[in-house]
Image (tube, rainbow, N blue to C red; front, side, top):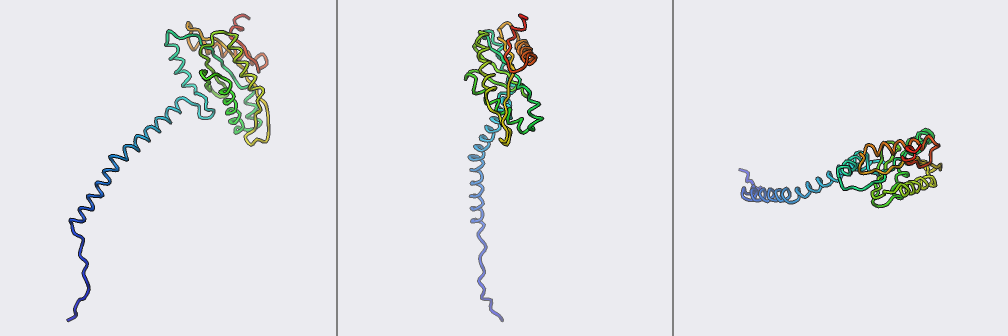
Length: 222
């Protein structure tokens, strides 16, 4: 008869296993109830901030977008106590030529630099929007005098004319100009009418040779 000298290891007790399982479950429950909600709240805030940014800003230029422009215009129009607002409509001259000559990457860089120039040459309370393509709209609250509006527009035009633009790889330098239409949005007019007047004045500026500011009043007085 062979004696078995091997020592048999006892199985862990069911009580210890249950205790460990219970501790793991409690730990997971703590994570779910304390950490997970914080993560969910953070992610929800991030999602909200991202959506808000997408709803308000143009992804390429960082200017406010067209959707937000019309939201604000409708808000202003609904306010019976609003004052007059200066409106500038502008188009970057010969932008298609820039794209054709230097490529779309340079076109994007050009639009970004143009947007930076707009933001750095307006007041803190003014708002610049990318209207579409190479067009922009600027709202100037409190500007009720046409002479002051034209002065502001000329500052923007000169800043763009005097700025140096570069290709995306910085190998070439070139200059750009802008044509601007200006109008005062009176409380008796709709925002569609104000934009239409500024747009007509802008195209008149292009007809007259580009790189200039034209007031909508000039069209009326012709």
